[in-house]
Amino acid sequence: MLVLEYKIKAKPQQYKAIDEAIRTVQFIRNKAIRSWMDAPTDAKINRFALNKYSTELRNEFPFVKALNSMAVQAAAERGWLAISRFYDNCKSKKSGKKGFPRFQKDNRSVEYKTSGWSLRPLEAWSLHKTKRRIAITDKKGIGELKLLGKWDIHKYPVKSIKRVRLVRRADGYYCQFAVDVECIDIQPKTGQEIGLDVGLESFYTDSNGHQEPNPKFLRKAESDIKHAQRRIYKKVKGSSGRRKARARYSRKHLRVNRQRIEHAKRLARHVCKSNDLVAYEDLKVANLLKNHCLAKSIADASWYQFRQWIEHFATKFGRLAVAVPPQYTSQECSQCKAIVKKSLSTRTHVCSCGLILQRDWNAAINILLKAKSRDGQSRSNANGVGTSTLLGASLVEQVLTMKLESNVLSSVGLSTLPISSDLLANLL
Ligand SMILES: [Zn+2]
Image (tube, rainbow, N blue to C red):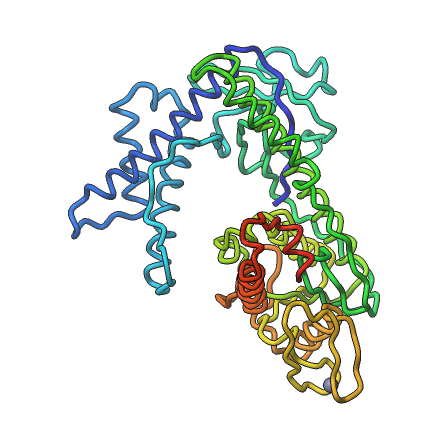
């Protein structure tokens, strides 16, 4: 599946109509969840039942009927997705919160499948083929939208377009096409293999000793973002000035987010292109994000996106991407396998066998060795199947040690000093 995205250019009332369609999707999704909650315990609520229910909604509410029928189904499926995720978590006995389905308040997209839109003329589009347009043909009144972007959607047969999604973002509206083409681009073997140890100090350290610096996009933009945030509170609640200030604030966040994605993508592409095997730790970033003091740095490091892109490019280039369980990767000696205990402030691995190596470099070698010895817990590819349930043990360990260290700081009378994450990162 290939996703092409265009920015939309349209008239204000068309944007309003898109908003209305997005609201309808949220209504259907929430109604589906409500009906599941209210159903008697012996009722079998599944995807089909909710699909059927969405048809009832169509008959009951004219504004639901106005939305394309497949888009209505897709909206009900979103409800089902939330419910089935909850079921799965319960079944797998996942610790902690199971994610009981909640009502959504901030939906931002509407998804059409293979009907309800047209790339071919409402009027005589054939006259200007170079101008890219889409018409949303259901009764929501969205109409013909101009598409801004360098892609050429006409290159693909209309049949291969499986989904069209209209998305609202802080800086406008976007149209995404999910095109069913295999974007495989098998690369010649390079004979190279690499292990990656992600961290806070550098974005990653690889098994060849290369340290990729951390870009820290959020930190760089932080004062700017904070400034925009303060300006929201200065404005009167409910005023248009406040709304504008809020929009400015979200746009700044959006920008940081895009920078992160681009950065992760570029690095992942490069790593996959130049190696036959890419090994990395199977970290569960979601769990780590719960720790507040580290959350910002971790989110900023955007490992999650990095991993997703590695898996994507590995499949695309015909490479092997291996996620290994993270236990002991930093403690073990990569030469003699002895466990060399070290705290986080110990930046160098020194072993009695004579190996002296930078700590993360040693870890990266261990990660590669684990992957090669087929210790790999999961071998994943672009669709991300088979990720293991292991916690990012080494990072949990890092977090714990760091807590200890910050306690030490407070015990020597530094407790009033606000400890910035940068400082913490330096402690690592
Ligand atoms: Zn050793």
